[in-house]
Structure formats: structure tokens, C-alpha cells
Image (cartoon, rainbow, N blue to C red):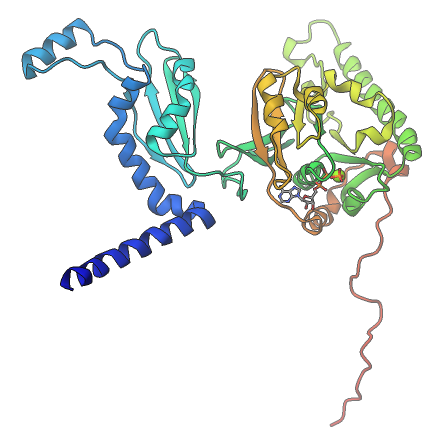
Length: 414
Ligand SMILES: Nc1ncnc2c1ncn2[C@@H]1O[C@H](COP(=O)(O)OP(=O)(O)OP(=O)(O)O)[C@@H](O)[C@H]1O
Ligand SMILES: [Mg+2]
């Protein structure tokens, strides 16, 4: 009987703790990571570092001097040496640790073992990146960060840079218009394309840029952003009027750059401009960012432009051919990853660029009302671009203070 009581006394709290842990892990993985996952994985990493590296083939034979010293001092068998490990730096989603590779090792050797390291240390994923020659950083991610997206607090935001989504390694995916001016975002119906666009518009709204929208679905997605747009086309006819004006604007800018290049001989190299960023700030025209929701609505062959579009984002697709169209010339693995996106996860996508790199990303949820509010709040930032004036959308008067009071005044008595 007393044994049974002891069992209950000890067993019940342990079972409750285990159940609580499993619940926390399933429902609140970030909280589970901070309270239990991080200490457990850190202990596993510290306790098994040498043996894990050895079983992954990431150790090297010790130098002859080291072997002699170890044998003389301890008389023990000399073990192969793992890469020198830096301090473990915990984060809210995982941890980071740097390794110094031995001569002859390369980052790809460590990357090839990422899956084995993940199992050995009980984490969701391990990513490897080269920090500098001979040094790699292991980014251990404790849980699936794309299930419930929370953007990192510190992101690389800036002029013409918008942190739109989260990468699976818990870093921000930043849409940088200066390095990649053109991008194609593709996906099946309800896969999250417009949400991606919503983030771009809301992120650019407080910046000194002109925003132009083409949304041939009668403006259902972009019309709510009208207060911040310099131009909006909501059907193919309007788009056909607007596009030549944009082309002329671009040609005027080429002329401006050319005029600058034609200045007096002897001008120092750094003053010769080949794009608008080379112009002095006082002469530089405001950048124009054009967003098109549903490029297919503009007409046949528009998607053939993809070779020009360095940035590629592919949401869930219904057939492999679509994924191949977006990512086929980037990496075959990226096509496979895009085909595996589940419909229950709208906003999940594969982002690639023409350097062959790709990653899974997911936008956080942003309601249309919040994005529209961000645009309304920065309506005063719409820059002066006279060529676009006739395309400026008419903003319906909002429900601001009514001109007269609807409350019947009561006579003041006294
Ligand atoms: N990251 C996300 N998190 C949660 N819900 C999302 C996310 N992205 C999109 N959704 C939801 O999924 C649905 C479809 O999104 P969206 O309208 O962006 O898709 P779409 O690809 O533009 O569809 P369509 O082809 O019909 O235009 C919307 O209800 C949206 O709120
Ligand atoms: Mg859409």
C-alpha cells in the first residue's frame, strides 16, 4: 500500500509535468523552447559534441605534436579532433554557434551533416552558413517557426527594403528593391500572393517613393491603398493607358542620366552616373515602385518576362509546370519544395534568386484594414510626379467628423 502511495506521489507530478510539456510544445512552441527546449538541447550539444562530430566524419587526426603531448600527459588513446567550437548563443527561436574548420574541411562538409546534427541535438532544423573563410555558423532552430509567423524584432529594414516574410531559419526575408528591382510572385488561387503584396505596399508606404498599382480584378486588392498610391489602374484599359506613361517616365530618367554623363570633360569618375543612384541627391528623381496584382490579367505572354525578373517567389501551386516556370532555372530542389506546400498554410512560399539560393518563407498575417490604415496614415507622403497626376485614384471621403452634429442640442437651462 505504501509503495502504491509513493508511486502516486512521485508519478502524478511527473505525469502532469510531462503532459504539460507536451501541451506547451504543441500549442506554444516558442514558450516551450525558452523554458525546456533550450536547456535540453544545450546540454545535448555540450555533452555529445565530440562524439557527434566524430560520427558525422567531421573530425581530423590530431597533429603529431598534440598526439605526443596528450600521450605523454595522460597515457590515453589520442582521439580525433572536432572543429573548435565557439560560445553557444541562445535566441528566442533556437541557438547559434560558430565552428572553426580544420585545414582541408569546407562548409559543405558540415552542411551535408545538418540532418544528422539535428537528430543528435534534438532540434527542428540546423542551417549552416559561412561567416568567413574557415569559420561556419550553425543556426539551430528549435521549432517550426513558419507555423505561426512572428517577425524578428531586429530586421534589416531601410530605404527600399521591406521585411515581408520569415525564412524557415528564423531570419527575415527582406525584399530589397535596390539589389533586386524586379520580382515575380506566383501561386495558385488563395495561396497568399495578395498578402505578400499587401506587406510590400504597407512596408513601402512610409518611405519616400511613388507607389503605382495595377490590379485588374477591379481593384479589390489595391483600391483600399488608394490614399498612398500615385496611380492606380483597375482594368486592362486603364493599365494600357498607364503603362506607356510609365515607360515615358523611365525614358525621361534615362535622358537625365545621359545629360549628367555628357558634362564637361575631366569630370571625376565618381560623378558619372549610370543609374539614378549615381545622381546627386538634389537631382535624383523619386523612385517609382510598380505593383501588379495578377499579371496574367494583362495579357498573353506577360509571364514570359520572367527571365528579366531576378526575384522569384512561388507560393503553393497546383502543377509542377507552374513551379518550374518560377523556379526551374534556379534550382530543381526549389521546384520540389514548392510542389510540397500544403493548402492549410497560405502565405508559405519558396523564394529564390538567380544566384541559385532559395529558402522557404512565410508572410505574417496582415489584415487588409491594417494595411489600408498604414497607407492612409502616410497619405501625405505621396510625392509630386506630375506625369501620373491623371491616374491618381480618387479617395472617397472617409467617415471623419460630420459637418453637422447628429445630436439634437438640448437647451441650457439655469
Ligand atoms: N501568411 C498568411 N497567414 C495567414 N493567412 C494567410 C496568409 N497569407 C494569406 N492568408 C489568407 O489566405 C487567403 C488567401 O490569401 P490571398 O488573397 O493573399 O491569396 P491569393 O493567392 O492572392 O489568392 P487569389 O488567387 O484568389 O488572388 C486569405 O484569406 C488570406 O487572409
Ligand atoms: Mg490575390
